[in-house]
Amino acid sequence: MNKTLLSAALIAGFGIAAFAPQTARADGTITFTGKVVANTCSFNVNSSGSANGTVALPVAFTSALAASGAVTGKTPFTIVVSGCDSKLTSVQELFSGSNLMADGNLQNTAATNNVEVQLLNGTTNSPINLNTGANSPVGTLSGGGVTLNYAAQYYATGVSTSGLVNTSVTYTTSYL
Image: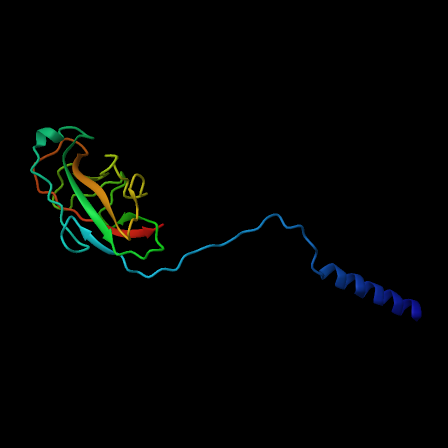
């Protein structure tokens, strides 16, 4: 009987040990950092006095947009960011909306005339891919503000035809 009791006790002890947590070697450490700031920034699009604005592109001739990839009518505009919390160091505008095309340009919602609107980084003149944010300028805040420079232009997706151009995009600020 003692042998049976001893055997049962040993089996139970080994069973419990099998379920005990195993000591593992640590492979690394992850540190999390962050920043909490007041949402104090204000925005002024193209000197409109508000966060909303209109950029009027010039009249363009179809002959200037006669082939896919042709551009014309480059028009500069700005987004002035001001009054930001002093703990913020830089900002970037990211674009979204229902008018974004697969090529990263804006769909012309007024006509089907093989014309899109393309946004450019106003400092480098590089096209901004609105789907990915590639080439969107990053502005370093100084005194809580910065002016972000952009441009917009017509972009041909084929031989353009006459018609109106109208589109819009929403921007969201990424605080870096």
